[in-house]
Image (cartoon, rainbow, N blue to C red; front, side):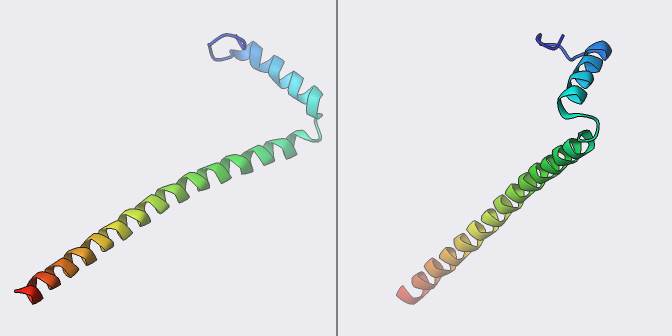
Length: 80
């Protein structure tokens, strides 16, 4: 059921594999799959970098808030 909403079954995967082999050839198939693997790995690394960037941003925001609180506290102490 390739055109439907279901997951392809065994026979349909064989048809897809035959079409891929005809399109790319047997010799190029490992190179194509290797490039797909590298693409997936790069995507995962990019997602992890986004998570670390968000964490760093939160840490910086916390530091800024603490510095602002100290500054306000210092002004209040000197103004009294």
